[in-house]
Image 1 (tube, rainbow, N blue to C red):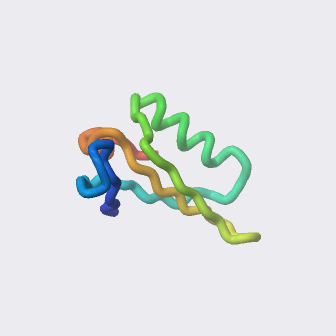
Image 2 (cartoon, helix red, strand yellow):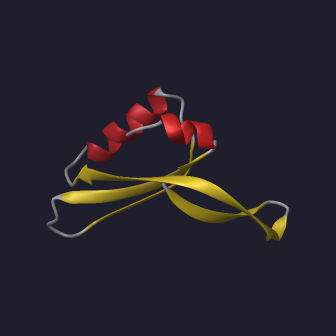
Length: 77
C-alpha cells in the first residue's frame, strides 16, 4: 500500500493520509474497465485514479485512492 497526502477542505494546512492501491493490468482495451467494474460491484467509491502505460508495453500501472481505509483492505481489482 502506498501513502499519499491530500489537502482537506478546511484549508491547505490540514493534511491527511489516504490509502492507495497499485495494480498492474494488461495493456489491452477493456482491462481498466473490467477492473473498475469489479471495484464498483464491491461498493468501492474512488477518490482518485491514475493510470499509465508505456507505448507498446504489455502492462499498465493503475494507482487509486478510496474513501475509506477499510474498503481499500477488502478491494482487489
